[in-house]
Image 1 (tube, rainbow, N blue to C red):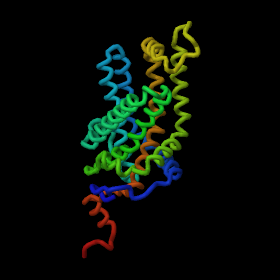
Image 2: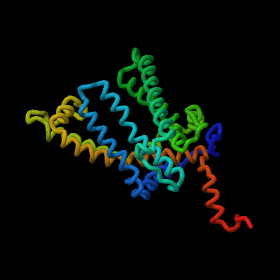
Image 3: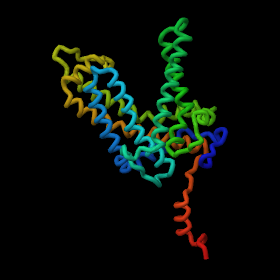
Length: 293
């Protein structure tokens, strides 16, 4: 895809297994840069987590902080998408001072996709709740939200590399006929992540059980939010430590997922980096065959 001129439809399908493997190898081969790029968003995430804990009794403020919690991930996502799509040729800053138009576009696109997913879930529940059992309604709602996210997901890497002409409609066109492949690719790429999910859940439940009251049920459900909130309020320092470990570990599968999306986007749309004037001049200087006499 020539920069700023996306094709009207996908130009090719992508090999699912090879792309999944490439997403993890791309991430692991660039681990030092991953640590560097994740450092600032990681610290910011911890700060927002602390702010969220301190405002559990203030719903509106807590909601605003929850929305702001997307900011660290946007900083990391934009930088990582750009690095993957540019074949590791660039290394953007992930600090708040590096926030640019592309970050606003990425953030607003995320909010729009979340909104459209909620609308989809609402419509499905309204249309099916009267004659379908609740488990099936919930399944359809989840599948509907996933479908919307998959069909619109190309807007994220496109926003990261500042493809101005690329919008949600273009993403919908490019993912036509690709949604099942993208869905199964994300299932495969996240199989290694299950180990981290189980580890994170174990850390959280160990924290809740070990810091709970002596008469608290040892078989506490991970969905018992009241008990979790009580444990957090009573043991904030311990919770901070657990949050730091969980947040740090989460960047590995997150980076793998971002790499996967970038690779799918590039193969499906034929996207290639735009060569700037500075890059052209540098290539001319380094290539004797193109130097002027």
